[in-house]
Amino acid sequence: MGLFLTNGFPNPEATLPLLKAIEAGGADFIELGMPFSDPLAEGLPIQRSSARALKHGVTLSDAFDTVRAFRKTSETPLLLMGYINPVHQFGVEAFCQQAAEAGVDGLILPDLPPDEGHLIDSAAEDSGLDVVYLIAPNSSDERIRHVDERATGFVYAVSMTGLTGSSIDGVDRVSAYLKRARSLVTSNPLLVGFGIRSHSDAQHLSTHTDGFIVGSALINEIERLWDETEVSLEKRLSKIQAFAQQLKHGDVSTPLAK
Image (cartoon, rainbow, N blue to C red; front, side, top):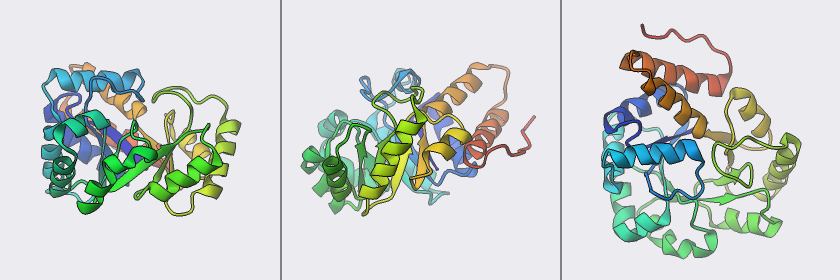
């Protein structure tokens, strides 16, 4: 199970405790989102989380600080997820070097197709970073094989031709697409994301994959908890840990802080 959290959301002070909470809840790896003003693949929940982080003045470099702090107590794999323009503006080689030095394991850049992978692949390889590429239900067999050849971490199977946070339309069609992808992706693990909101969703969609990724559902839960002003930080974090556990294992009994 992979979980996505936007750096600096819901505020810069909360990100590190939240990373630790979702790790304690069973995350096998974490995607740390680099907030961006025009996140093309994201639906409203992650758009709001980016806007909220940017309002706090969070920058690209702040992601490295968060990863360094997380690495003091954790070896859980962590990937940075964002968009190519800020990385390009930062400087691709400098970005990859600083990411690796901070403790980042890989990169997910949804708007970078494998055909343009030369923009980052060499710098990422030199820094020891994996690069994840995406496929979608309308990807041809040839395209899926090409993505599998270029990816070095895993292949990210987007469950729908839409935005994060959208509802899955047609589980049977999605299952057929993932079964097809499973037969074509032979060099990398295959993980599915977009539209997964519950353990049941995850179970259905990961039948033909090696795992699943959840972003918007977690963002929504964090947003709800942080908007409840009377809830203590300890209880918020406990509930997020329980939410992660439920996504991975189904209904579980987790004592919550009072």
